[in-house]
Length: 158
Image 1 (cartoon, rainbow, N blue to C red):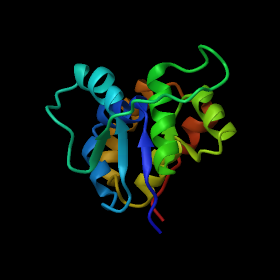
Image 2 (image 1 turned 90 degrees about the vertical axis):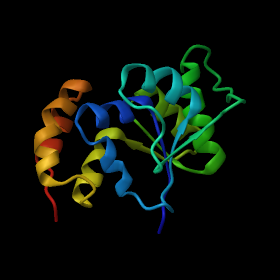
Image 3 (image 1 turned 180 degrees about the vertical axis):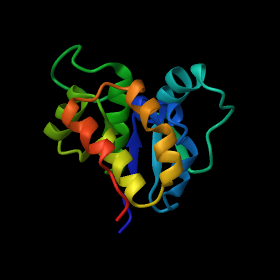
């Protein structure tokens, strides 16, 4: 069964920081990986040595932002992720608690970023060597509660 994902900037950035960015090519073409154009051009590209989107990543524009009911609860960038996930019935991957809560309230499927990392690793999208080499950089790039950090460090291939 194919499953498509919308990736927030924190997900792309953490994969990049850990040296796992190209590991995302592991997902099959049927499992689309999408990012809003605003996130890609304004948040991800400026601080990275990347010229263009890789073939495995679909960059899409979002012109209409959803009304979330709580002014200021989500940034415009977060709203573009939510809109893209709603448009395609994709799973929204983020580590942003407010974005996860808002998405769930709108019946948009979500996945925490670290769960996405662990699943990518366990499904052999990230090699053991690459995982071991990048896991500390990943942990340094984002805040993880201790219980989540422990799950990450205990991840094993089946």
